[in-house]
Length: 450
Image (cartoon, rainbow, N blue to C red):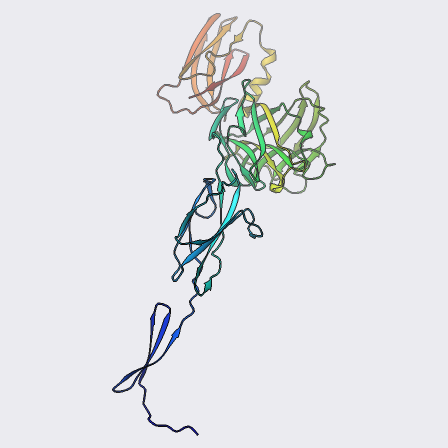
C-alpha cells in the first residue's frame, strides 16, 4: 500500500503553451509546482484561398496562386487539375515555404482548372482547403459589339445558358466577312468547347422578323443548336430553332413560342440539300405566323400559333445563338460554323405600307437615301407625276414616328429632302422612311451608324 508523505490542497491548475510544448502548474495557498511538460501535436488547419478568386476568368496560363498562412504551418502543397475530383493533376508541388507560388507549367488556353492547398508541419499534414476554379484566358482579339444588318449587337462571353455553355467573343468565333455576312463558330479551345451568340441592342415589338441563312442547318451535328429568336425572359420568347436535340433521326426544324406547353411548338423537315434558306415569323397581337423558304422562294413550312401563351411586347430583343445542347461536345468532335447573310425587321405599323408597293404609279418614285449608311445626315429623293398632298416621315424599328420631313401639297417634279441627326440622341439602328403622295405609298430602309 502506497503511503502518503505529504498532502497538498491545490487551489488552481495552470496550463501554459510555448511553441509546441505544454506546461502544467499546480498552485497551493503558498506554492506553485510545475507538474509535467508535454509535447503538443498541432496539425495546421486548411489554408484559406485568396487569388485568383473562385470562378475567376481571363486568368493567365502561368498564374500566380496565393492563400492565407495557417498557424503552425511550415510548408504547403498545391495541386491543380482539370477535374474537380482531383483524380489526376497537372501540377502538384509540395514543400512550398511561402503563401504563394508562380505556376511554372503553362496551362491550356480557355480551360477551367481547379486548385487547392494544404498545410504541413513536423506533426503532419492538415486537410485540403476548399477547391476553387478559374478559367484561363484565350490569346485572341475580342469583339464586345459588332454591326450587322444595320443594327448594333452585343457579343456574348462567359459561362451561362442556354446549355449552359462557355461563350467566347474572339475574332475567330464571331466576325463579319467582306460581303457583310455574319459568321458564328463552335470551337474547341484547350480542353473546352466554346459557343457564340449575339444580341441586338434595340428592343423590338410586333412585326416581321426574317433571318436569311447561307448554311445548310440540317447538316449540323445532333448536339448543335441554331437559335433565331426574340427574347425577354424564359416565359417571353419566340423561336426558330434548328437542332436534332441529340437524336440523329429527329426533324431538325422547330417553331416554338415560350413558355412551352401543349401546342406551343411544332417540328419539321428541311431537305435543303446545301441550299440557302430564309426563315421568318410575323408577330401580331393575335398570333405568330412562322414561315420557311428556300432561296428560290419555295415554301418549306408554314405554321401559325394562336394560343394563350402569346408574348406581349416590352423588352424583347433579337438573338442569334449557335450553341451545344446541355453543353455537350459535338458527337463528331468537330468545330462548326454558321453563316447568316441577313436579318430584317419590319414593324407592324409599316407592313401594310410595304405590301402596297407593287401597286404604285409608274412615274411616282421614292429613291434610296444617300449616303446609306449615314451619319450625321442623308438625302432622300423622290418624284411626283401629278400634283399631290405629300408626307415624308421617318420611323424607328418599333414603328414610332421620329420626324416629319415633308407635309404639304407639291407640284409634279423631283424633290430632295435632308434628314439630319445633329443635336439628336438617336442610336445607331435601322430606320424607315415612308412617302405618301395621294394614293401612292412606299417605304424604304436606311441605316444610321455612329
